[in-house]
Amino acid sequence: MIGDVRGPSPEPQIEAATLGSRTIGLVSEVDSFALEPARAHAVAETTALLEGAGHRIIDIPFTRLAPLVSIGKRAFDRIIYASMAATFQDVRLNEDKIEPLTRAALNRGRAMEVGDLWITMHEGVLAAHAMWHIFDEVDILLTPMLAHKPPKLGSFPTDHDDIEAHWDRMIAFAPLASIANITGTPALSMPAGADEAGLPLSVQFIAPMGADRRLLAIGATLEALRPWQHKFEIAGLPQ
Image (tube, rainbow, N blue to C red; front, top):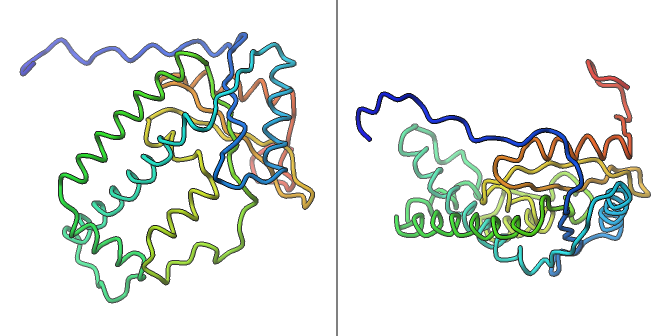
């Protein structure tokens, strides 16, 4: 309402930080994405710890999240294009000095029709709605964070214009990272031990919108069940 002087609406109520007993939806597989055994073991071990602490575990098949992964990829793709086109319209930059991948994104942004961006935003709303339905059944999602160990430097080159291949590499590395971005749900990555080479493992928790404290509570619970510390001293952080 124009001219409304009642002041801002109250902040959405966020639940108390206590976790209690929760229903955790387990996403243990990522189907077409190759999940390394060590990453799968990290999820399984975390599941066992939480189940032992009294939480109820139910399986959520990856097929329910796969459409959200695809929407996340398209949204990231088109929003990057639109952002690049807007940036180069508002800021004078020497296009001869940008990388081939950036130039390809810029050119696609300039050629993209406004309807494509609108469809992407609409798909994001539908994805958020679909995620809400999942949280009708569970309180928190537990998923793999990464599908494989961190790749070597240079594994995501930008000296080419094959944008689809670049996005595919990113999604294959962290298949379920984008769904929190596109649906607006909070997510938390937690340490989950180390692999045979000593590289850190991790798992991901996703909660409904506004349930950030729920994530912090399960993070604190998991930290108590499986304490961890940085391998090397970091200034200002306890060992």
